[in-house]
Length: 77
Image (cartoon, rainbow, N blue to C red; front, top):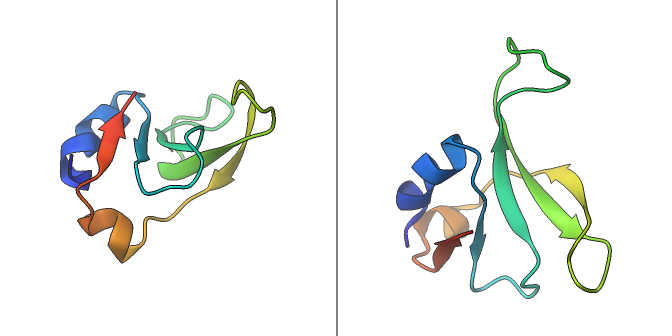
């Protein structure tokens, strides 16, 4: 899938990942609220797994690169 195809999924709280990423447990999401404040601006974040099975992770801000935006290997979860 293309980035523009997964963006609606991210807008409703879904997550997405790229096949080219070297860890199958990496994924991105779009955050609309922060600590229940609805006036903040939305931002992308990536979850890095902290356990081998990928069940937990740390959130870090993420900005898609040109390669991310133009790649066709996106999938949604």
